[in-house]
Image (cartoon, rainbow, N blue to C red; front, side, top):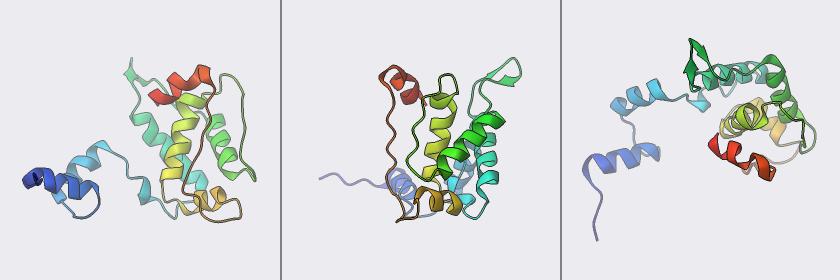
Length: 144
């Protein structure tokens, strides 16, 4: 039996939230957006914040980010989150796999209270998000 020790053990315990490490915090704060820092933010403001952070992780070409969520896409995301039933959409060219899908997943993975109240659809809290993607869009969805 080989036990994990030293810096590897420290790193594993850190990512499992079993220990704190200020040095790791500094590294991750520069690279990643903490989805759980906006629990009480209103949904509209939370979506705006997600979109700003989403843009930062896109390719930067000719001084511009390659993908920037539009106001229409933000409204569409809110409509999906707030829908009374499971949402089905098939509108072509709306940026679903490159914009909406990753933002929806980030919203679900967050602890934003208003978003999760909508995801519950009047029932119990949801812990599983199922997204069915048409076969011709699987590659784009996996890339995101």
